Image 1 (cartoon, rainbow, N blue to C red):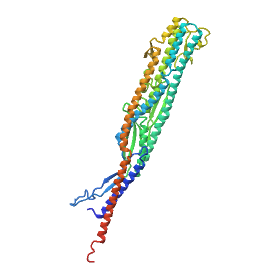
Image 2: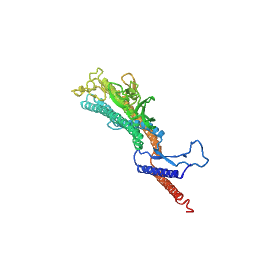
Image 3: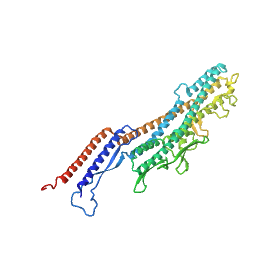
Length: 502
């Protein structure tokens, strides 16, 4: 049976709960602009009557025992967190690729008047002028100057592409692997701190906010899945432990974090391989696995594609190597430089005694990096080029004759003229850039929508919190009034009842 004294406890619990709700609302309002803060709420539960579940039930009304503050929790939607992190990996992948593709386009930009296509046109124009006066030393000098400018563009393109590749290698080490390892270590440390706080009965909500921010950052680099489990630590206390798995493109999973333990990533390079850069996974127990064929999204995927992607020139069949990255454009320029040199050299001297172009390193294999005007041409005292109009016209025609460009292993990558090759390469680059841009925009819009929905639940709304202040203050006032009423009733019972006849 509920007594008057138990009602005091009901009033006290109501006051305590209202105070907790007011304090939590103040905490929310104070952190309205704090990045990563998750809105908090008091978990309130109605207490059942003390006689509930007894052997003999009474036939009188049994009110409950008021309200109990079970703790403070965060307002988060786990499903939206999963969607956000999955989409964030796609955005990280495309945005990183887009940045690199823009760098490549800035190098191979045929819209500029100093582009490779224009220099080839200048060389053809100089040959046409020479064909009108074969053997003219001045006009042949103009041909040499045009040839030197053209080879200089080849050299510049190759050097700039190599610079971009070197920058990407630095990115995969510094922004990629090192950053991921730091995030894994920090999340594991926070897991330990949160677990200790839970064991001690202290609130760890702010630590969880920090951990969620780190998990969001980690999802930019790799496709991850986050899971929790309840673990008994004795004395009837259960705490939550968090683990993070990397999900491969084939659905395989690898444990990145298990409570306070974490795995590590590393980078190795071997320039003799078709895919020279490898990302390796060292598990918590120390086993190491090459992960290139597992990483299918996130910034780490972008770095591998840009560093290893040989496109049509790839022979390994690896996912990151079969895409068109920096190596594809490097090898395309190498193929072009080699084919141009061999074609024009043969037209100037069938026996190879008077090459117009050669490899600057003496290797005999002409690439975009080493192509130059032949020293024998530079040092020639008389006419070096073919000295008949017909031969010169044949050389000019060589620039507009269809040629088969291949990878060197028999695989044809393009059929067309020397001048058409640059247009085709530029078109490939523009198409790839447009595709990456469209994907980045689409993924980014989807991510923004998910984040909007997530914030509608987790972020602080000042107007809503203001209404809560009024509501909880009224609740506090009512509970306080209830306490006062009980006090007045107790005074009446003790001091004013049974005084007749004294």
